[in-house]
Length: 379
Ligand SMILES: Nc1ncnc2c1ncn2[C@@H]1O[C@H](COP(=O)(O)OP(=O)(O)O)[C@@H](O)[C@H]1O
Ligand SMILES: N[C@@H](CCC(=O)OP(=O)(O)O)C(=O)O
Image (cartoon, rainbow, N blue to C red; front, side):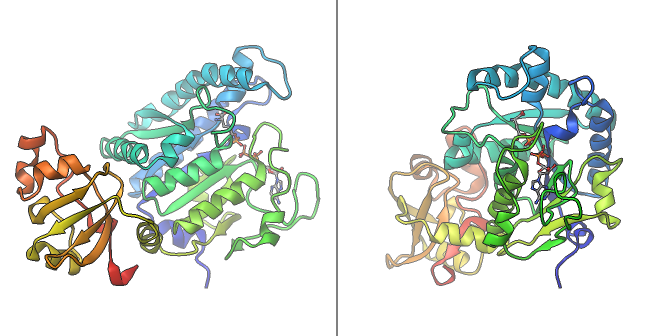
């Protein structure tokens, strides 16, 4: 049986909620729709009270900036769009600050580029920052850094960015709030009688065809095609996606009470997705030679501590995939190193408590966290 939204939500610890421009802009004034910001902030606060941490991905900068800079309606040139994003982003964050502050959730802006998401090292940095923000009780509010993004290297829609953020911060659920309450058999704004698709088990070409032309929608840029593309990224990473209407008093709580929506099921588990990513690493950039105790610990499902590393071969940065070899030289696992090769050479053989004294900082207790390790026979 397919899991309903309420079942999915009840098991979630961390989620990414993306909200589209069409919901946040007051159609009359072109400015922020304050009531909508407040409604979403309240919904996020109630999720937090239920123990669900959320990262918000908010569009709206270009639309708000267009108004602030008195730019014409219609398609903007790239440089105009970038200028609009710069002027609109401050208005967007002022609106989120005003809405979130009364709930004791400081809004923390993070502007990400395509490069941040696709380069492993920057990805790890961004992930660490988001973790730290959530641990400190802040609400990360993410947008694409449109002002510096180049035409070729940008998502352009926040749906796919949100899916990558969900993957990055190890969320179990991605919620795309829009002006439509799900995926329909045809664009409901044009085809009366179009039917809601409640559950998508697999993103087939027939499902993709329902997305229609990307970028045809009004205030938003992505349209349904980019939401389906986002759901696909999430599904492959083991994350469920829900598309639902955001124009309600509590759009998140309503989902638990059976409001209409579309669920896209994950294609795999999050652990399997991470494992296939690690074991698919074509050429590990280095080898960590372990002592017997460490090899036994890794085989029995524990993290690798620096204490058990006897030698480090190769040159690699933190976040890159390395092989783990036993005393006999045979590779027993692969994993994503939390430290670069140079750092590991300095802390190999040390107790975790001594890492900071040697490096001046500590990235983590483990050299490779168990979640980032795949035994050879599991690959
Ligand atoms: N098959 C479909 N089902 C639902 N909506 C669709 C479909 N095809 C196109 N759309 C359009 O996509 C719009 C949502 O995309 P968009 O305006 O970009 O939203 P957002 O600003 O939330 O990202 C809907 O309002 C609808 O007009
Ligand atoms: N970074 C852009 C996002 C544009 C975008 O994806 O819009 P939408 O389709 O409404 O989510 C902005 O803030 O305007």
